[in-house]
Picture (cartoon, rainbow, N blue to C red):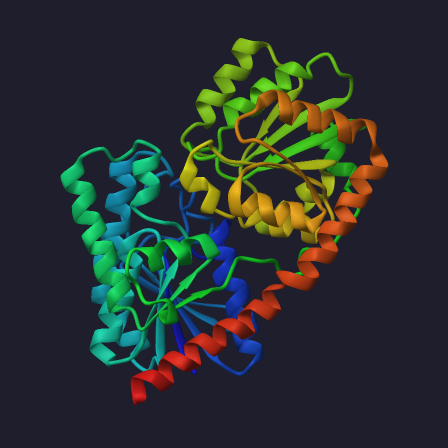
Length: 411
């Protein structure tokens, strides 16, 4: 099959959508399929173009045999709802003008959401070529923005929800990344037989256990420190201010050091709050490349998976937790619902209530005092991901969905 993926984000950008698309594409290529990705020029999350790229109307690139069609978009940092939305809209319009003729031989097209605009680009190609459209639902949008308080205007929310439902109904198949998302759509009237759950996972051959780099430890002044790592977006969804409260509770415990790696809308506020609290056991680091992410995971004695304490996040599964488990690093998950269930079933994590700074601090202290427990959790997590969330297995399941959609369109 010739498969085309529409996504606002793609390699060399790091993050869940880029990793998912790249890893799945590699598995599909190994199975003798062909993959194209229609995307933007890489700039996430800083709003600065990656080295080697110059913004233009269109650019073709081959990344490890994936045909990448980059389109002009308004570039902005990963903060500011209006500016980010303008960036997504500009990509949709630019891709509609530039890339359709480049992927005209497509058999099936996938549009990944959020936001809706990449999915709309995929719908446009599907209509033009009369091919199946797969809508991939990685977040419930706009519901997440309503829960977080970003969207409050009832008329705008109602309009976006109608748009959302129209796309679900237009899709030949729907792929969700959590079972809870699937149940949500079924409850809203989408036929169960057209919805499939293919979760995020990890490329277990890439994310392998490895020793920490002494050079990196020394560079970051972390020699002989028990490193508590958070790596990822520093935004409104992660409740990182509560992690700072945990750091304050452990300020007098020797050798425990919190390391925050990444960027986001709340990073400046978090740095300021760290200074206000006088926390000497907290270090911030800029975003890193995918290869460097491995080095930081290896460096960590424990990794944090935090989410805000809102009901909708009971349905969200942070994709990084599969990478962390695959690298045999123990996790403290301050989550509920489906992500908590997975972490508990894995035997690779300690799970505490979200936004509970004292419980997070207590869990960190327990692992600090019990190195054997850290080792056991890490090994359990690696085994669990290998058995249940290998990206290789999930890619085969996804191909079955795509082939089913192609067959359905031919009837």
